[in-house]
Length: 224
Image (cartoon, rainbow, N blue to C red; front, side, top):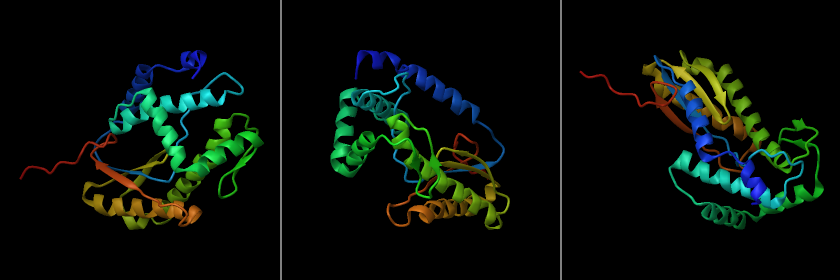
């Protein structure tokens, strides 16, 4: 990564503080909450840049820096930047098709991309946008399909309501006594949403968390 590119990156402390503030805004109580996380989306993490055409080294550097933050914030794993670089290199060794796709996209430099359902985005100049849009856009298509199905089949989980969709998560509130039924309902249609688009091309896994608030605080049994 170039020195100039490194100076443009926000500090880890700044990013962590922003995340804490965001999470704090989500806190609420009074009802049970089921959060579904799913969809086979590969995150291409890159910090924003003022350069119209950042170098491949810059893009790789941004991705590895983002990987260190994701490893710690999501999994509690500390990675040095060198370890993140090695992990990224090994990932592309394991999935050479993705490396070829990246190289092909960079060479062809298309300004139009489409998701798997044909939804298009025009005027793309940045490589990160051209790579990200078909992947994240297809994930968004699947999430929209799932939300539509949850609405159509809402009688299967009476008393439950979808209150938010955040990236690849769907947040549902429901009465505490119907947590199990609501969880099954959410998982069923989140899987079906992506399966309707990608079929059996990739495994689709949905993880759910239940809690008494939007932060996922575990439900506790009332004392007898």
